[in-house]
Structures are given as C-alpha cells and as structure tokens.
Image: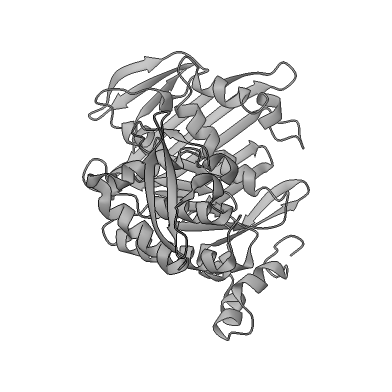
Length: 395
C-alpha cells in the first residue's frame, strides 16, 4: 500500500508531499492540478511498463511532449524528483519502503537522464537497507545479504523497468504493474469485442463486453451474479445482463428490461447504465483480477446522483470487507460532485488548489474546526468543500 507520494518540479507539482490512505478523493477547481497528481502515478507506470520495443523513461516523456513539457514551467530548475513510500508484506513480515528517482534534463535541448535512483526498505526496528547502489551513472541491484546481482548503465532506463530474478526490490515493480487508470467513455464502450480472455477492464471501458464475458465464465460466476443483483436493485427496469456472440466472432453485452419482448443491445444502452456496470465490475472482480491501485477521473460522469450514491455505498462495503483480509485495492479519484464528496469521510478528502501557479494540497481532516462543523451538522461535507472553506491559500 502506498502511504505517501512526493513530487518536485513535475508539471504544476512544484513541491507536493501527500499522505495517502485507502481512499483518496481529490477535490478543487478546474486547473488546480488534480489531473497532474493522477499523471504522477501514470508517469511512474509508463516508466516501469513501456510498450514493447520502447524504453520506459523515454516513452514517459515522449507521451507528454518531452522533458520541457513535464518540467515545472515557473522557474529555472532542471531536476524533476518523484518519490513513493509504502508498506509491503511481499516477503512475509511487513516492510516499509521508500523509492525515489531524480531526473536531470535541459528543456532547451529536450535531453534528460536519471541522475539518481534509490529503493530503501526497513523491517520493524531493524536497520534500513538500500536495494540500489548508485556508482556514477551505473545503478546496481542489491540483495540481502548485501551483494550485487546485476546493474544497468543506461541512464534513460529506470530500475523499475527490469525484472531481476531474486532481487528483493521486485515487489515494487509488481505492485506498479497492478495500477489501473480509468476515465470511462461510453461511446466506445458500445463497440463489440473479440472473444479472447482479458485480465482487466481497459482505461476507457472499450473492452467492457470482453471483460464481462470473463466474469460471467464459471470460475467467476459469483462476481457476475453480484453485478446483476446490484444493477437490478438500482435500476429495477433492468432484469438481467448477458453476453451474446455475433457472426463476426465478437461478443456484445445485452440487457433485458421489463415490458420489452426483445433484449436491449449494447449500442442502445444508456451512458449512465454502462458506466455503472463498468464500475460494479471493478468492485466485484475476484482478488486475482483486482489491481493494487485505481486512479479514477471524474467518477460521477454520466450517472444520476442516485446511481452515484448506490455505487459509492457498494464500494465502501466491498472495500471494508477486503480490508479485513488485507486485500483491498487503494483508490485515488477526482471529482467535482458534491454527491460524491457527501459519501466520503472528511479524512478521505484532499483539497487541491493553486498558489502562485503551483499546486498545493491539504487534508481538511487535519482541521479540528471543520470536524466540529460536520459533527454539529451545521453543514454537509459536499457543501463545505464548495464554499471555499477548505482553502489554505492566503491563510
């Protein structure tokens, strides 16, 4: 689980340190930097898992227009620093860990290199151990007891890009591989899919029929049944979902509705219904298909407030169930909806705003007077967020 992130000179994140919990809801005005926080996670994922034939760091910068487009534009700095902290029990007893990468570049020439990269782990009160050793531009993978396994002299590639057999730091790459990013687009969710099995729902939901077909298979039948039950409860006119093959060897999701003699095809299903089904499929996916971190942009899009309310209630119940088994996925989401905010706890809210062109983050749960306002029911959390009372700028 991630416990903290830190970014320096990454887009509008001139100097942001943010503690993370199980659920983290980013709220604030447009252009405050919420999407840049989400892109922090995506950048690290791109750095660790580039497309075949690409190098991670090169791929991450090219996808964003180059080093100069990613570097903070309000100063003359030439270093981008990204850091993660967290806990893991990948090796039995729980470890705490800290990862950091420092990238040096020249915006004018758009060149860059990794100046330093580190991964430090600690178990209990035992001394911390470094799993990476920097020697000039070369970085060595270190194991326990301390010994060099291998190294990379390529300053354009992160240690996260390598799968090193027997390296104690491999847990971090494995965890990052389970990060999922979502910004659903119903118009492309309506497309038929090939019948091949998939391991996760793609970012815009474009493989929804394919993904649900896998959940409908016998091994995951319980997941599909739970999706259908919540869907029937939330949308009583819907009596069921099913997948059907086409003559083109594709699969298409369909629904049955009361009072209709023929099923409703995917192309005719409402945008809100599709978004609701997609999110339910993530909530009820079996543990082996569940990501370690979900980054969700504007969860409220397309859905009626009643559906949003139901979705968040089901999400909390499911997460609390998995938390007891230490298997719950972590969530970071953005929202502009008071309905979403009202379903959250104060400590789950992160207020994001701009000061002098740079993103500033604060946790309103750290402010006792705000807690008292909510406890006394003088104001709802959604209303509190959008009155501007959470702002730290100018205070």
